[in-house]
Image (cartoon, rainbow, N blue to C red):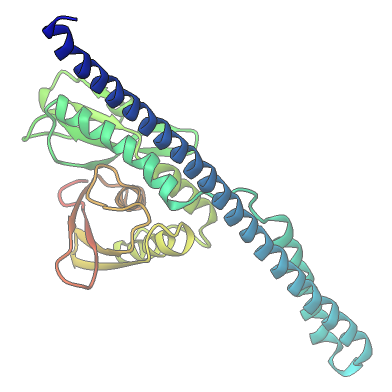
Length: 297
């Protein structure tokens, strides 16, 4: 064996050992990933099962109260009216709880992941097209359910709002360059439609009352935030102090919290609304969402 061959042999042996170790580590990591995925799936199923069990127990408790109250109404003639009413209410609530129990639960982290990927795509689109930082929620084209709302991102810094009919396409390319930009279906659109369907009473057209309705829907109905406090700063602006966002940072493009508020204000006042989001200073809130409709008739 020549001297050069003698030198090359240990090197080749060392490289083979390193490659074998790398392969073994990759296999071990892949096995660990598989184990973690299985454990994650198991925990999700356990969580869903626990929630369903909780609903069933609540239904059984309500049914027990209903039955006892009904039996009490039979046995106690003097209190029969009240007890029978209580019994009927308990049985009805038990039936609703039992049969309206959701079969599938989606964690906030899943929703955050879905929104995060869409926000990254929209942000990249805005950057690639050289669009502005303005976010406007404008009345769009007519639909069978009424006027729709679009998120318009202008191309020019000195922009003009396009006609509603021009917002029917993603790329708004009118003859007037000041009206050009992109028109997106806002993430808050379906949320607002659901909110409006379940709203007790009519949607307010007074800014203060409307802001309160939207804040309550954001927290109580959709649970997208732990708290939302509207504060009127002037006649053409309202700022919402948001804490505990379920979908992370609100200062990303078309975040469901800011989008729902922008769509709601635009639809309720039938005005074009500019939405600005920023991190809050101090402990009173995490983010501030300001909706402005100055000179937007």
